[in-house]
Image (cartoon, rainbow, N blue to C red):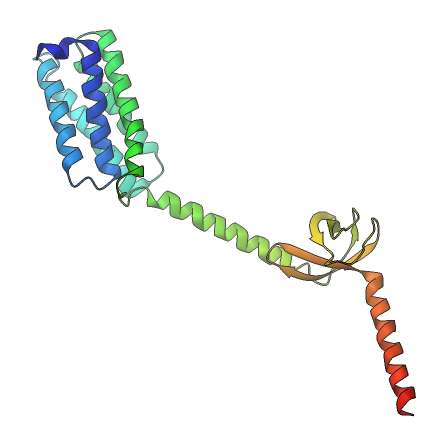
Length: 230
């Protein structure tokens, strides 16, 4: 396999091997990706390893793969996976016959690992790094729920219109600005408002004057009803 002495071919072999091996960890490749990756790396290491480097470079590369798997199954924060990539780079770099060859082979590891993400668009993914997704979702839900609770406590509070409401605007309540709606009621800047309803993060307000006007109107209606019955 003298063709493996050519830098570009060495890069290609490492690139494909790493893409297949890491891809097998990301998607359900039914073992095919793993077989292709192992076969390619076996060609690479069997051609370059001698008595000087020995088999420990293979152990470095294999340990890197295991660290990536461990990160996906246990830690799910990417730190251990990065250490695994470093070990893989060290494995192929030490086994390379020259520094330029080693640089290209190391690039093959990095680009191959990055390219393996493309398999996620085609093949069903494995349940790795699910803790990150779950943690982000839970954090988002907790933040949204806490925001809803904080907004819900605004009901009944008084504030002041920071802008005209047509029908949406900005109101200052307890010294904090909030985006709100008046539900079609005309509210001018500087007018005192009251929070009457909160739906999720949507705040509905009304001018305080309108509340008194409604009471007056209600009283007038009651009075007219009494007069009619009399």
